[in-house]
Length: 267
Length: 264
Image 1 (cartoon, rainbow over the protein chains, first blue to last red):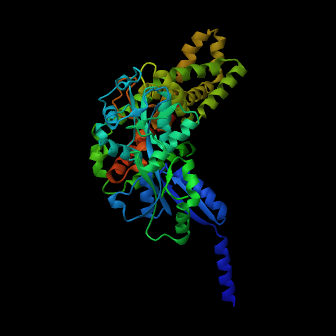
Image 2: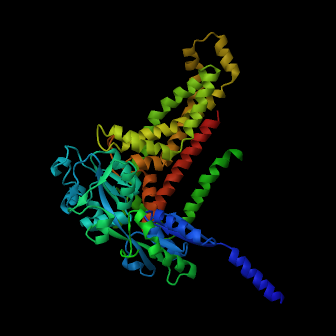
Image 3: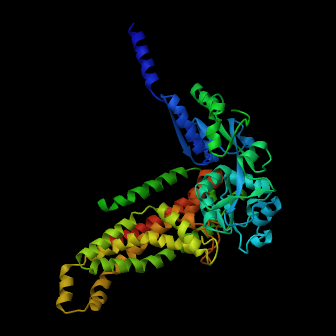
């Protein structure tokens, strides 16, 4: 009898104890994850979700070491990372951005290669103003930098940049303050900042506009996969969150961040 | 004992770094740091350009900020009561502005201004100006404190000798400031060398040698901030070692500067 009471008490105290889900990793996914967390917490009052940034690599490392419940990784997993279980949540495009006053609104892959290797140094060569081109590149290790190098087929040492940045916001601020600058950032970030007054605009790549719609149809070339990763066989409350995060219900949250929910057809 | 307490934090950090480095793989990397090229993907971990950029930008900031700090400390001291007090409060407020605010100002206002001469305006000069603005309050307050410590007897003696303001500055004030000025300069230098976010936002970060005002430089701290979260293995060890070197250097300079400011 006493044992039964003690067990019941223990069960009660456990159920009032709040369960936590910790997400760490990609700074591209973090704002989306925060919105997902807020929505999920409102229907699961006993659950707390913490989101911390630090880059896709941290997402992988923390997941391996068991420091988080879910890692946020804004690229496809590398071959040596398949010890982890990945859930693809969305597709994100990489926009090439220029200053709003720059009349150049379309760039070919060849143009991008020539600009980023320093073979082309003035906008007038592309029919723009007679301004020097300021090349803005990302620091090593960023998922966006990896994607850009892969798409252009360039090695990091071949890039001749004037500015190297850490995150999307720094890139957008630099381009907004420099009429001759060019950079590449997440389409979601570019759209949000442009809508809130930053003097930037996204160029088309080989005639395809940098929009979530073009990403969804698969026509836009600079696309990456946003993933949530876990150790194999995660606990039930984590699995439930992942299932909800990829359900049709969450699609509007992804769209509001300028990324395309996967599968694109859902919702 | 109390005077040593400000060293506890750097000492703790130092210990943490040494513990983090207590890994047999890390130390063999040390000689690689002497190289010129930083290309982690090719296992090249030379930080010569980053170290020279750190010294160039911190030294330049010192050259700009020291005269300004000296002038404002003297003005605080010589100005009749309320003016001096107000100026000191303003200096305190200026010293409390977070570095990210300076960095953002540099990125949004200073760099566009400098880019009229040389786009994008980010680089050695912009970083130097931002750092100078950040360190002058610290230095001005250290000098101000040293001026306050000049004994009244000496001040009154100078006045009773009928010295002019110029004579008092030259014969009484300046000689007693010599140590404090060196100390304040070292405090400013260590703050400038350790500064990360503000510099990261305006220095360009490509990693050129600091050979011109618009060289796109990367400091040791900016390199840590840009790459640490993404680094693994030897790359991470090299970053930890560069951080260890920086903290040893700044701790020594800080300790020396503090001694000069407090021991008169």
